[in-house]
Amino acid sequence: MIGVGGVTHKHYPETRGLKTSGGQKVKKGTILTREGNKWKAGLNVGGKSSLYALCDGTIYFSARPGTYRTKKKYTLINVKPAA
Image 1 (cartoon, one colour):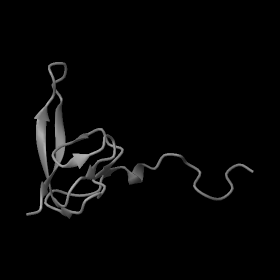
Image 2 (cartoon, rainbow, N blue to C red):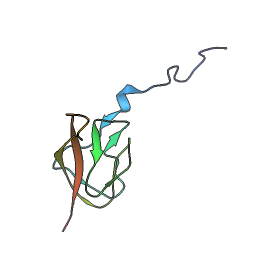
Image 3 (cartoon, rainbow, N blue to C red):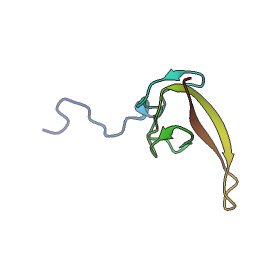
Image 4 (tube, one colour):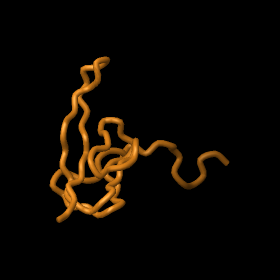
C-alpha cells in the first residue's frame, strides 16, 4: 500500500524561509526563519538553522563581512528590545 493517504513527499520547501519582516514587532519565542543558512543569529536571537527571538521587540537586519577565507556577506537578524 504505497502512497495511500497523507503527504507523499518528505521535504516542504513552502515552509522554509523568513517568517517575519524588518520593523515587525515580535514576542519572545517567535520563529523568525526556518531551515535557512542565508541568515545568522544576531542580537537577542537564538538558534542555528531555525532562528527565534529571545526577547520581545522589533526586528531589524544588519550585514557582516565574511572571514578571511570567504568574501561572502552574512545577513544578521537582530531584535531591538521593547522599552
